[in-house]
Length: 132
Image 1: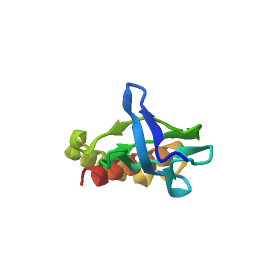
Image 2 (image 1 turned 135 degrees about the vertical axis):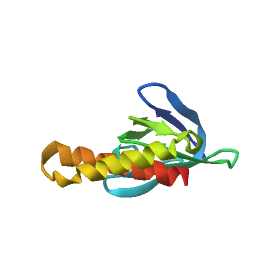
Image 3 (image 1 turned 45 degrees about the vertical axis):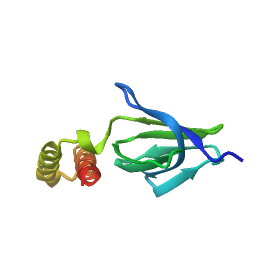
Image 4 (image 1 turned 90 degrees about the vertical axis):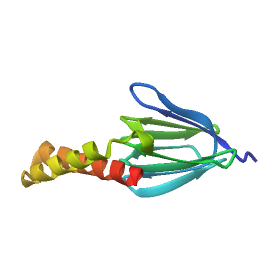
């Protein structure tokens, strides 16, 4: 049995990460979950969250990952996300301002506006959590 699994994280702009890892922890609509080597094939939608993983040398990584899709198949994890950021690249003031702007829009609880606002708050909070 394999002890590691290949991880590739892609955004529309770039390949964010590619390498062999021991484990991955992220979040879907159903909550947080972990993936280890020899995981069964699966596809899952992703929610904005702090995604963590450990490479084969034991180095721990933490990154903000936005909405997207994760697929596990044949010893590989493929994450396709709208955005990914390492903690050191997060502009904390920008994230705080985005959260404040979204909270101001919460008065409209109908339709797409409310859902977009909710998602904007979630993205901002997870960026702040990733940085902290």
